[in-house]
Image (cartoon, rainbow, N blue to C red):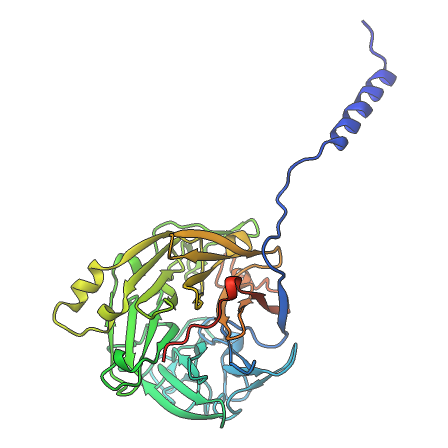
Length: 421
């Protein structure tokens, strides 16, 4: 049987037409409530976000993760800013506090180190507004040296927790961490507050802080906001450490971390990172950036300083199941936990009441979900900063594209900010 070229062409045309007529199921890419743009960052690279009861918004710009944020004494790089418009920011609480004399790095020591200024920001990693509407600034005391690309070690006076009165825009308290609490290679990552009088000897409440260091001891730091006394729990237990050989994918690309200039890339070395309190303050949720698992521990055991408190705290850790690859956490008044799921362009919702994880919102514009803030009027704010495209991630080149984005989305079931006073 002889088939002509004309017949072959006609058959091909029929096959093509039939294929085009088919409806092929595909990923819709979007789910959940509408995603709103709250701010666009065109200047420095952000991580943290926090929002006051009156709607004032604040972000931080970590020198410990981006040398472009490292203040050198002349470039006026700021560590904390108030977001004053859709794409404008001003240093907060003052230009002076954001400009340490000579810069964030001390070059008079044998090796460059973080400056030890107690009254200036060095390398801020987190900003959080507490239940009394006060802004707290968590300073790692560490910065990347633009000359070497190395994250320098901190010195005493650099790692600190700074409280700022939003009414007067002035500092009302500075808590310094001893070097056996914030080690020189610690990386103080995120913080949450419980201001109930019953949880501390001073009656002023406590703060819980994650140490996510890629070089040192991962763990949880607890500090009395009245006495400034601090201690550590869960140091180097597996649950605060990264898991082995985790390879997340964001926008179809595998995520490997660069260990430093001229060094091989590696699996995620980042430990305890995201942190959030339950609505009643009785449980602390935490997880490592290098792990897909969510954990919790009773806060009473973290606050305890008894001889067996570390044993009891370790024994009480609960594995809450997989959460996805995530950075920041946040919780709401309904007891829901919000967790970034960058691999799925999403923010997840964990319901502790039934142990399920669901998607709150999903959108192709979502990439690296860094930090979250829940507001009293029932919104979740979260920053998307393209961290997976920074030089810290393979192939080690800067592929970020401005603007970076602050999104907000309405919370379900009338949820709002957790108030522990």
